[in-house]
Length: 212
Ligand SMILES: Cc1cc2nc3c(=O)[nH]c(=O)nc-3n(C[C@H](O)[C@H](O)[C@H](O)COP(=O)(O)O)c2cc1C
Image (cartoon, rainbow, N blue to C red):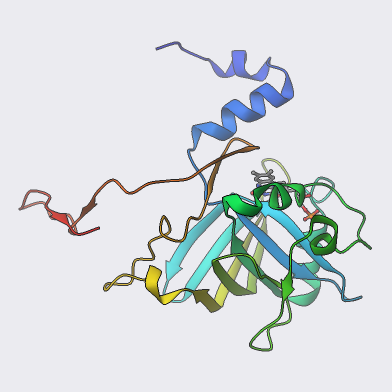
């Protein structure tokens, strides 16, 4: 294996460095975040640094880049307190990817990229109608990160919309059945396929497979 020191990595061209470092942490759950501003303009952005924080209370976090780089999602979440996260799929990937472009604040990115804003359960932020896995969050905390001026945004889960046929007997959502994409680096997308599933690991017994 080749060794890449941080001195070497720091010296690379910025996009090469971004692709390399961003790939190291692995495949990511790529989604569109839907928000609405105070003028009722709907916004979309592609986000892949999304992480499960806990199931009780059910909360999920994501990293928002510095405000100069990615201003609208964060500003809308700060002002409205609500947002949706919507899985992405291959049949409308080019539209979804286009939502990572920096559109002016007064442009509805749903309209600009050709995706359908859907409002339901009186939730104030738009869902992406084309998405097979959609969920809605209420802002809990925004933690500024000193190291690079990005933000860790934590939300409490309020609603989830998933076809029941994707939900297994014990609650695992089969995201490969839902054909949810994952991303790598800043622009590559993949479709994961199932490998194996195991019973809860205990030190006094060998691992045993369960049905996937
Ligand atoms: C595959 C992919 C993943 C991305 N992941 C993130 C992310 O996790 N956090 C982030 O701030 N921007 C991410 N971006 C960039 C945003 O989509 C982009 O900055 C977008 O314009 C943000 O929109 P906003 O200004 O409407 O918030 C990603 C872009 C792509 C293509």
